[in-house]
Image 1: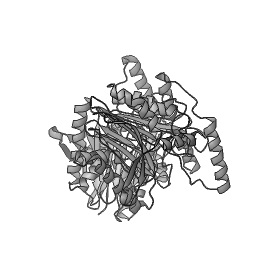
Image 2: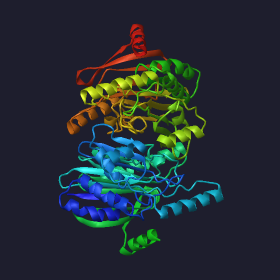
Image 3: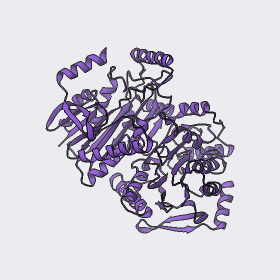
Length: 314
Length: 314
């Protein structure tokens, strides 16, 4: 069995592009890298890579990570500007013995040393969006709506049984310069073990970094729970605990793929994920939270997808 | 019951200074902040704060984090220069709703905005040490000995039953600029839950970030293991797994304090930790790994401590 899963509607592009590589027998690492790179390159996904959302001072800073489920090697970068494909740098970093997690200028210098293409990642469209938000903040005097923080995450299982996970994001819209979320943090933003499965997160990083739910889910699978039971248990138990102990809970959305190719999603907001497996062609699913921490999953129609692309390209 | 535990011999200074505050009924957060600040200020602890170890280009970059075990609020900074007390900035950040983890320039600007004292943290002594290492690297052509990466971590339990944890380090000596270790990463470098306990890590961050052992230990305590059993199980199972899956294992040292005031240590290298509880005056312990993942713990004599201070001040 082989398969892959990715977060948000944007993952459809990566799953469609990279799932044929899985069918051809390529490695989970290659598949994750190719899927996420395609999403980073696409200008209309507003919270990842090229065309991503600027921070409070109008700069585009990105976070990314890659993890190899065979040997647990991790590569991660955070607070980086003008790197065309953060996921490729993260993966390269995962092959180093030390200095696997680099931030800001140091990460950019590493990318340059390693021959990665620099690219101006801020687009006219993103600048316009930022100017509109600045005007809104000036008008209302408040910076509450940190909306737009969607991270692309991809988990893959290849024909050899190896698994990998990657993440990439421009982080919270209007974030403080230098702000880092959960996406480059192992356990919190992602985790993978080829003998168990892989899990990844998207939502309010500040809340998701309060517990390594991705890791916890794999521990529960190891203990005998199904991938869906394990994810539900890890995610919603913490959502309830955080509400009780901290009074407020941000957006939490997770995807999981186990080492047998079964997948799951848990979310407390409307969410989408894209999947392809040996048994299933690339498919986008809509996930809508219901009462009692249940999620209604329905396949997205061609019409839904068409409207989505129309909307983001406006 | 109240108590506190800290990593390495340097923790003695912090425990002696801050444990009276616990006795007076002050909060675990205050105690962690005061203990670590005292250690950051002391010029002869070579891997933390003032006098810390420079990176590959001779700059001193620091990482730190703070976590509140009542509400899971986290503050963290990484890759920061010239902040007198990183732990104070981390704690302040833990009080924000978002933007809790900041790196590099963005973190330094936040510290300035919040009125934290800037300070040139690189000392003549640290520069001399760096020049010697540069000469050694030039002579041998290799940069293998990344020794000197001791993180100070402090876990505290106060009379009100609240717990907190903090970390502070200059990271790997001769690290790549921008390199971040496990110290600012929740789950991996630290974790605390006032209803269970607190755990913190020091060693090779690149390996320790491969699994959130601090979090895992608390899960095992919750499942019924004693603090020592839980820590041993989490640490050594992963040390063995990493050896099997990745071929090599760096230095792993952990301290834990549970919510009843019992403490534990696990390590695969010679290590020290300092403790003070309601029942025990400040005491430094020497931890020496034995066969079968056991650790021999002996109180450090006054002579040992005297020789330690003589050695670091040379």
